[in-house]
Image (cartoon, rainbow, N blue to C red; front, side, top):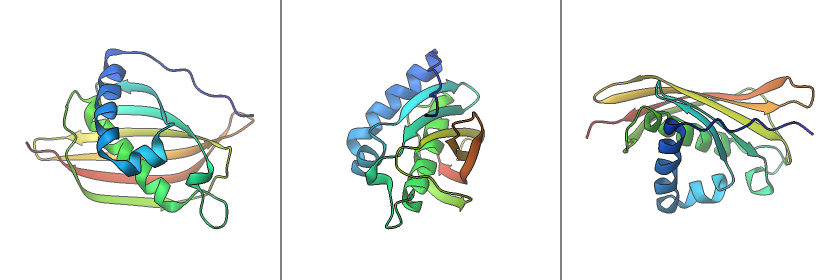
Length: 153
């Protein structure tokens, strides 16, 4: 079985977790698909890492990770990158791209890595990578994505 990463507590991670806990009750799809996601780290520079074990609700008709789940993770992680920079409000999505490289199956552990390339006064630009954690310590990329957010208040 693949090992899980250890949580790296910090004030930035605590802030991101607070924002996530405020988002969850207002988004039934996040609550359904991402209720068991574990945030592992966050930095003021706008990066986060998280992990999620693939459950039956994440699968398509071929019993592999549904593309909608990858797109949802890209949306979620891009938003939390904005939060990692210290913002309470993470804005609205203007553009999301997800490239499907490989897939995962039930029981696989996904590592989610995301960073904000830029968070400006109007727009934020983020990138997200989802990897399947390998049993031998090597990860395989599942999806790469980008997410642009309108963040002007």
